[in-house]
Image 1 (cartoon, rainbow, N blue to C red):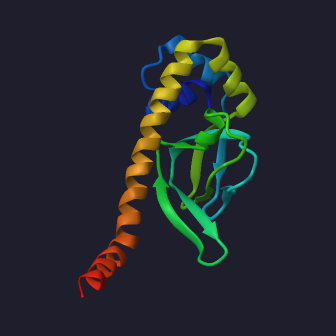
Image 2 (tube, rainbow, N blue to C red):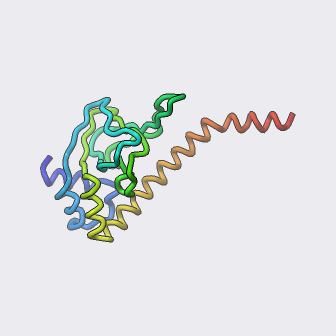
Image 3 (cartoon, one colour):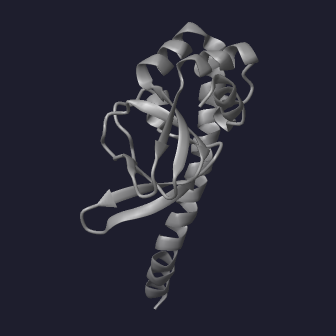
Length: 164
């Protein structure tokens, strides 16, 4: 992927919205294009949060896995979205498993480099954290709707039991 293509790809990302061309250029200078074939596990829940991915093409499933129920898809992320927010927030490990649903192309930035960019320019840090918070808020809304769907009937049943 050429520098111009990386610049154009990153410019379309919600998490980097609000950055000037100069500030965006700091990401472009260290970005690595990556591809993950359909079905590939990109990272697993509990793996060290070594990088962040800015998806440019394709979709990835975010999955939670538990011994009693196996793995469940909790979200699908696509072009313009972020994978690996744990790296942005300085968390030591990923909180979900990411799997390519189709051939996925993305721009990758390793965690130490990302953290250095943010430490060197607080405006970048602010925009990145603000936009990451918006991404997490969206994912939390989805999780709440899923929880309501899973647990809603049980609550109604419990209330009906109390009434009798």
